Length: 88
Image 1: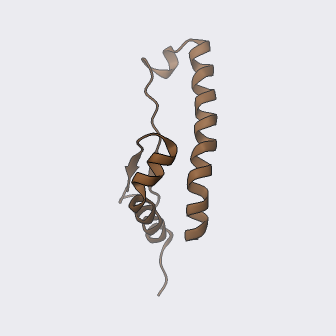
Image 2: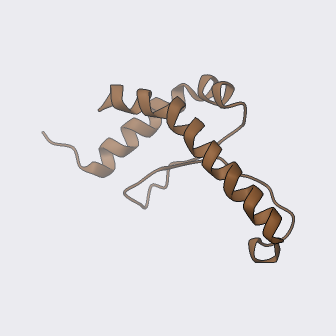
């Protein structure tokens, strides 16, 4: 019996979600966990509230947001990549 990528993605998502508290604790933030059953992929988001629309931010605010996102992506990868690799 073979599993589709959609099924495997769902299995990985659910396994990660079981460790939600620890993952969020390691990141120091709450994440948004979206199973997306109608899609092939699942989503784990690290939201960042901003004042207004992104197109309305000043150049300095946009730069700060980009710097935050780069740092967040590095941290996100450091916390999640070992877990995903272990599941693959």
